[in-house]
Length: 113
Length: 110
Image (cartoon, rainbow over the protein chains, first blue to last red):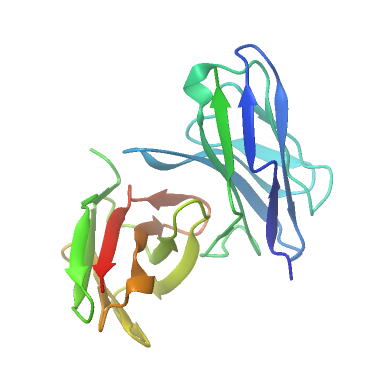
């Protein structure tokens, strides 16, 4: 059981470049989300999805775009990378919106230079 | 004021000690309380989950929720070096958004 899988694990980008962080889950979870984790700030919600075709913004959505075409996949796109987006990104999922607990992927370490 | 406050530590204890980790929160409507453990360079993993007030025990771990004081705790008995990690508290009203503490770094010294 793979759980929540994120790729890539490490990435270095130049300012202004775009890229996509991939997230896939094999638990048939409806609810998926993206967080970023920064020192002293904790985990902050970027975007989330309650099912295929439905997405919404979280606490820090600016500079990021998401889509949900299938139940399994929830990619996060950085449109024009900025140094402020240097962070660790975690994808998470739960069975449904009221699932009460969420399960995280292993993380993607992104550095923007 | 942050929704959830957590002392970042770091906390260092000898092996076998009892560890107490705590979070306070401001929103009295929170109903779901969780503790996650995060090892270095890894994603958070769910450790304990509690609904509403009360205690929950799982092996060496005990989670306590005091809604009247808006205070939650995680106790680790007979701490082991393998418990060295960052511990995150998390809370939710109905499961549609989770609020996380910043994490407490724990080191258990053999």
